[in-house]
Image (tube, rainbow, N blue to C red; front, side, top):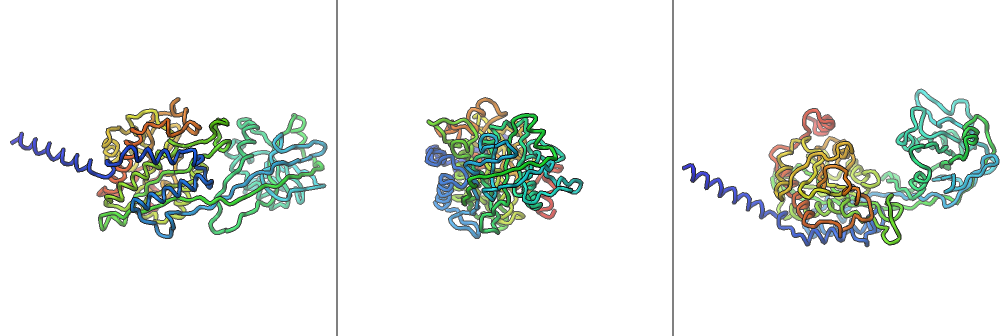
Length: 503
Ligand SMILES: [Zn+2]
């Protein structure tokens, strides 16, 4: 009797295993994922930088495959696109500021970034502390800065760490404009951010997302920039209450519109009731572009940051899920969302979370995939494992291709809050992120992370296939769950989740 039962159990085990292996995700071939990865990370796509032709070409490629796989359009979209309008700003080629008898030159010891007019004559400087105003503080009290050039210290009265410095820039410019100044110049005093780095970081083209309600480019009101003093005496002089004669001229900044897009598709679930709930799968398809935009070492021979690992791998995993889940839909509906503008501040996913095409309170989970690279081909690293009651599904999905889960690599990096899933988490949607296998930011990761060497020829396609199949299968298992997932008790996003779903 016992023996018979054991045989029956064994038989049904093989039957289940073979039924599982019949699923479309396990029919995907290595040549397919290799082809996708080679195209997306090819030199032709020039590093897929947001708004550039290579980025738009990648989006077009994704939309063609969504269509070919039989994925539906989301409401209010065309060509599977949710358009985001960016504005690129290029600082003036040359500029000159004179204060008293001292002249400062663009690129040398001056960095004018934006603003009008291009020529300011016969004015004076006024030192205005940090140029900061809040409930307890007013640097403009008793100062008349109308028609003048305001000089300020970096940061705010509360601090001058780099974060505070960057975050306060826009507000300080607005305050100076409100007070009637013609320009605001910050005095460079950033010990931990060398001037040469500072110049190349801020002196290049910058991208900003335009408010969808405003159709035209918004002109910054007054001239804004930075200057670096040469000597201690000079530093003391410029931040004294004394006012100096000043002139300022520049060749003018340049702006142009750069549309980019999230690529989004929907697969309707097979269960009449559960299909009203959605699992969102995300992967960012943008990367950092070429040359100095890449913020890394490059040469004349190779200046393209191909982003094969970051994040063509995840994008191919998303395509694999699109194909598999469209061919054999799971119980819940699935949203496929390839986001842009991750590399410039998670802007594509943030835009979607602010302007969702499927209501977020019907979105029960976000499975994201992103990665810096991999250094262990026996594992998939799962960022956020253990936080959403989905461990069994994740483990099963990863083990289906013979790999193991590694939970929360490099905890000091706080990766959960640094990828696109965080924009869903902040709204309350339970989420986690799949990354190619690594345990820490070791030498192998550093070798390719945001480097020109992150190319298809350095990727292991056997591992890529396993990664893609396990991502697709895990998505299926999550979409098939009887009970919808939710944050575990005490998680920092639990409250946001309760608000979203009205628990
Ligand atoms: Zn990435």
